[in-house]
Image (cartoon, rainbow, N blue to C red; front, side, top):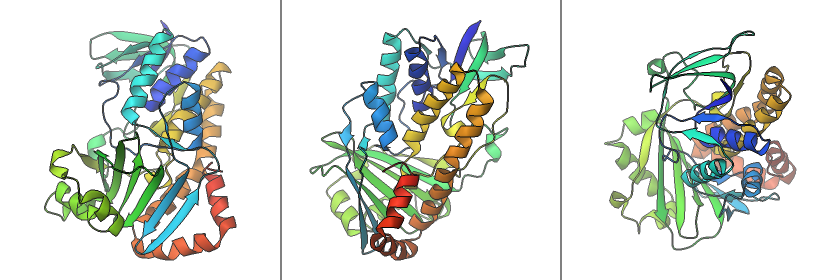
Length: 352
């Protein structure tokens, strides 16, 4: 019987494995695909994520000391007082997996979970794997993504459409750029000295109305002068663009099974508008492991759900604003004239 099994090998699951290994605790991680498989996501690191990855010697991180928000002709510049950064998410997963293996961690890839029998106060978890094996575990951490808590994912509303690509840049000003567009918003951040990540979230209705998703994205890249300057020299037909439908981002209510810890997007998913998704994956894993050491799964769930609630609400607000450039053009000057309000928002998001 396993003491601990981690289901899911993304950033949250791998952070959990590394945090357990740092405490001398052996755990088995099971991942349904290959570690490092590209995913639609931003790759900006809020301060808490940058700090933890540096502690684990995950590098190189590209420092991001400031951000610029664009809405029509308006621009708002923000300087982070805590060190923020950026890095490829796939690279982080591969390096976290390599670190875990060096410490004796066990990772099984390309094996999916067929079903779970929940633990009770007297019996362990039973996990039926695609290999036919049944794994028993005393405790389990679940890090299986945005759709994992739903009984029938085919019936889940998917109101958004996401895009992600990496492209070569000629200039690196070490900044995060966010663009409020009509029914969409788009972020660009350098992840190496020569590559940038671009991630976009759009209303699905807008994408469905276009000739094709790629044509819609091409249109977005020409809809703002700064974007036009960035993307016009690029041949998008030669660049791999990940795209697909996405659910709403919200707080979740996973099962209250004994000895279970729900981390990352299984407990809450944050709109990319606030740039905290990466940090949430790592921080929830760290806090869950700290609670596991005290055997307090219920307290972890209560405390972390309470602490993430503000970010969920601010994410929803910023998401609504960025999807409407006219609203963004009104909001940016208000924030620019109100440094105390801006500082309060950044403090709530752990940027200062």
